[in-house]
Image 1 (tube, helix red, strand yellow):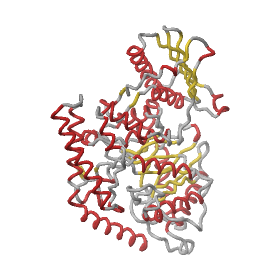
Image 2: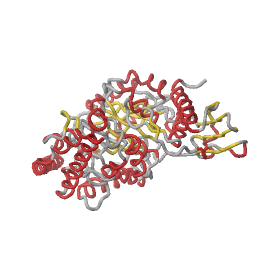
Image 3: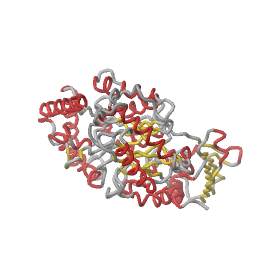
Image 4: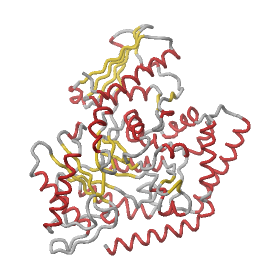
Length: 526
């Protein structure tokens, strides 16, 4: 029997094929067979799609997968090839047809010898987002993720963990807990402090689900972090010559060893989070084999990719540290905890202070797909196989106010890091916005990070939106295109929102300077 969650791809596949063939080729009988084939692994396959158009009457669609999750990915890969897109996690954007020329050539005709196979493998094996359970479109997010071939959702609080088993059964997506649990200072040599930390972990363990991800069978991954602030250096005899981050890694090593001694059927892997005070090179301690390196460069500059030589922040403070950590953890699993979709990050500190926020902790995600693509290539080059991003604040209120193609482009790049972004954005502008000439606006990165922002780049960004706003108003008056009024009004309001930042350029730069100065002083003091 099929797992319950396979009903989603089967229904989507039947509905979409029936709709597409009825419109373009005439009505046909659709025969869909889904099956598990463990032998695919021998050929380095995760799924295989076999298509056949039998005369003019019947479509045969036979999809095999290494496991039920891979079978689901196979279904949505076929729909992607047919031009189907789910752009955003909201009801009105669930089914969109790209209106490209229908790829009838995918369906071989008449006979077994002419069958067509589609075989793909994702660029990253673990692909997901981190959310809060109280997001008002939480279930829409789950449907959006599986339809865009993502396989993980992380919860940023314990609220919602009780639903983890139901989510796995109903949606076939893995659930992890990504949360700050420990104090600012933690020491493996302080018995009372260490035992209290282990007790906190053991309380959470029964509530954290085992991974159903095929590579991680019988494993529980713990993404439990130090406090959300600069960590404090330990001055005990063992750690006084170590950095704060080395003391933290020493604790993680001891914690994993202690917990796994009591485990019988499940192995525990636990993360070392490179974040704020622990985002630095580690030299005196080597990780246990069960330690996962989790890279969270919250202090990075979003106006440049991670290895851009023109950006001192990313070149000196970020990418050089990532390279060093990846070398230390070269034999361990590595995961990125990114901020590309974290509207809360762009709604606080320097972004929030002068009006960039919709409300406190909810700002507009900058459109930086080309920067994001280069970031992901950098991580892949350094053998990082798991990519997660915060998506805090992406709820119904956000989607009603902003147009953020970054949301679906992130999912597509995790599947294919070499994606042709310009072609994908051209389709989005032509078929969703119904404004092909808006492509110019989306074909450039918005360099708006006050940490490293040139006046020329900022002026170019603002001017382009001012020009586009005038063009949008003309289109609304002249009805040049058959534009959805809601989409048009949203784009005009988005232009107004962005323009409000113009007069605050210098104040924002000054504020950002002091933010970074405080960060550096805090790091030295710790």
